[in-house]
Image (spheres, rainbow, N blue to C red):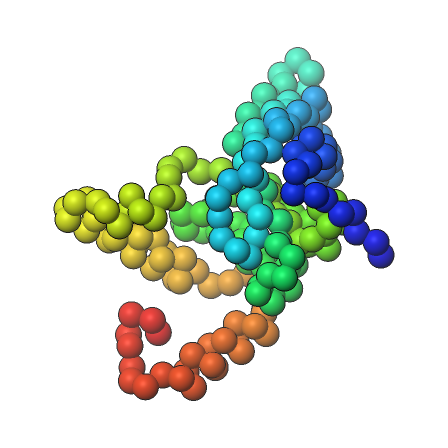
Length: 189
């Protein structure tokens, strides 16, 4: 199967593909529009794009209008991520409904049919991700942020993965971690 290539400088094409992905995931949605995505700073495993989507759903007389800030994550070429995208996206689906502070997964393209590489479309949550600001905070604010981050990590690690998320990479990396451990470190276990 040939996947479409998507140059990094093609926001208009990205908007059309995000729109198509939403239409596939939300067949009842009408008047789907997507703003031109803007590249945002992120990790090296995925390219991140921010955009806004609008659509209506429901009977014409009682249509519900939806406006949603979104983040599109597309696996970067040469990414070190070795997981099966279908398993990864299945694990992400529904985390928010299980009490984890996580964005809603609106849609995904695990085979990369629309984006040329596996992609996921997530709810864009409010806030900032400035590491320099985080590290430069005064002691009280830094302590509060660190404790909140620890609580969020604990919430995530308390969730039992859903069905269809059995990922051989998890077992592999857990075994590597345990093989390399010199002494018990409860915070990481």
